[in-house]
Length: 311
Ligand SMILES: NC(=O)c1ccc[n+]([C@@H]2O[C@H](COP(=O)([O-])OP(=O)(O)OC[C@H]3O[C@@H](n4cnc5c(N)ncnc54)[C@H](O)[C@@H]3O)[C@@H](O)[C@H]2O)c1
Image 1 (cartoon, rainbow, N blue to C red):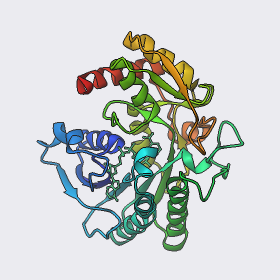
Image 2: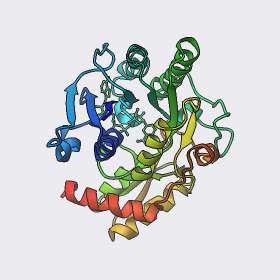
Image 3: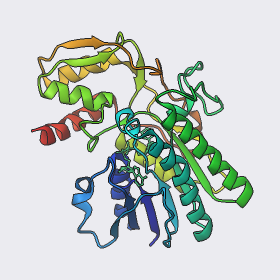
């Protein structure tokens, strides 16, 4: 039985990952400061004798024993990461230093949840891992984008300098049950607005695109990545390349919920990328992975979840 640390394990992705690791018969220690995560996300797992949950902020050192580390702690939505931008940078940078130090001491492989935001507002489309990005270093999104870039730098320096067994995944937009209904991410926003009969707010003209990956597909490839051959560090893009405009997404959600909500348009927030689509050739070749869940099926599961919690 492996002892696995999941930082940010009470969040959206971390709780799904914890669930999968427990199913695969591992011992899991979740470390979370509950800034955006919630014990509710883990409620159904708490009876497991193999789960331990610890309140801790990863900007402070952590002394535990572990065999594998998944570093997921970090608020992921703009409303949350912009709420206290200095803390966001500290979580990404100081948090990475602390977790890398722990990995070094315990000789554990460590996987970093990086992000498509490292590409900024990309000039290359779709984005391959070799593209270095176009990122504003001083804007309101920089506390997240630049701090995640710095975390990647730290991972690769620990690998070169200390021979650490690292894995870096660049996660593209992911959705599914246990997303926070109030975090302003587009899928949860549209679904909650549709279910409550409120106007659906599209920022800009609705022609900007995103690619959405269902959470089960994403967790599958994250575990594959951790268990891949030692020399394969990534960074590797993970996401679903199927691309949709925000208008198409809104119309699909209106149809699936049967809502009578109206679509309204508001101005685009600054530095909002106009398009985002992963090139996943590397994940396909190295990890034998291809996302399976199409947008409609994933949205049906997500809508069913939001119906329960919004009601
Ligand atoms: N969801 C996505 O589409 C997406 C896309 C790209 C990258 N990611 C990355 O995946 C990870 C998880 O994202 P998510 O969508 O589950 O977000 P989330 O906000 O639901 O989860 C983040 C978790 O980290 C915890 N946390 C935040 N700061 C912490 C700190 N200093 N110490 C300990 N815990 C802390 C939060 O309480 C929360 O439980 C993040 O690192 C994020 O950057 C997510």
